[in-house]
Image (tube, rainbow, N blue to C red; front, side):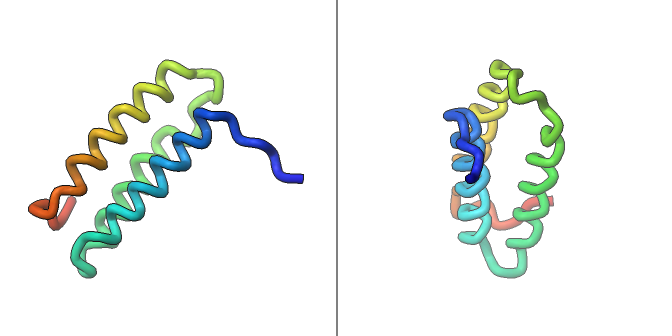
Length: 79
């Protein structure tokens, strides 16, 4: 039986999926740059303790702001 996810884990997963969806709205040749950036950003905090709620909540807020920025059509590439 699969392990149930907490509310915070669901939010992180939602943020990750939304980030990938946003990356796929960008020009085809630049999508890989966005996806790599997303993987790097999430990978930085892969070993963050599950009980570190304040840090996770902060990172969720920052991540949502980044998605809002990246979703602008003027932004076509990321380095």
